[in-house]
Image (tube, rainbow, N blue to C red):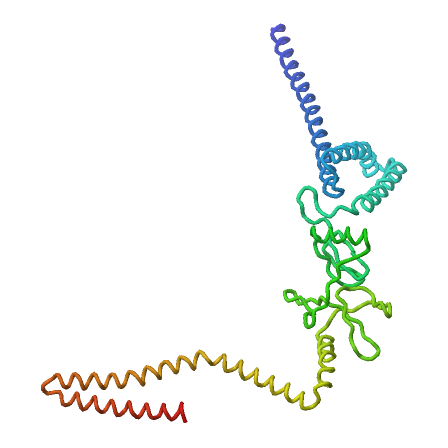
Length: 325
């Protein structure tokens, strides 16, 4: 019995030992897998960041991702130690300051000519055009100086920007008379400056008035009306009072013509019905007369036909009087 008990105890101990060994090995393997997964996640993040933010090709992006991943894995234990135990304060402060400085400088100097996301092709920058040149933003927000919303950049704008950067020349649109607002959004597409004589000078882009140095203001409905009167004033002075009356009469004639054109379909339909009546009534009378002559006792049909013809004659007389008198 003692031997049997010994063997039983030994087997239980062996099973327990094997379970503990397998548990330790499993924990080690799981820990290794978690470390590899964590490192790969950091690497994937920096790989996408380097490619999208700086526009680097895949080889350089991988090199940057490997380098930044190694740095992150070295500094991360310091950060955890600082958060949990308050240790490594000096190391964390120095490392954090260096990382922030390098990150900021890399974004400022490394993304200047990156206009599109290398992975998706979507715009990475947004822009506005001013009289002084181009202004860019990383988001589709509003410019704090002129209050204009930044627009997504496109390939044509990039070409224009490089031309402006190289030669200092920029394609400035012309102000088209009467077209001061976007027909879709209603936002102003023209800016203005007031002059001492009360006139208004228009500019196609935001910026500063070259005469006064003051910021140009976006167009409003009131200023658009002032501009229209400013354009019309010389014409009215040249044509005189009689000319003004002629302009008003011509405007009234055009208004009446538009009203008549709107009524034209109804008038044509009425004329069509009236013509059908003028032609149909005599034909109906003739049908009654012809049918009455065919019948032996068709005197009543002939009389009805004659009566209808008399009514048709009255209609024709009224029509003649209405159209030709």
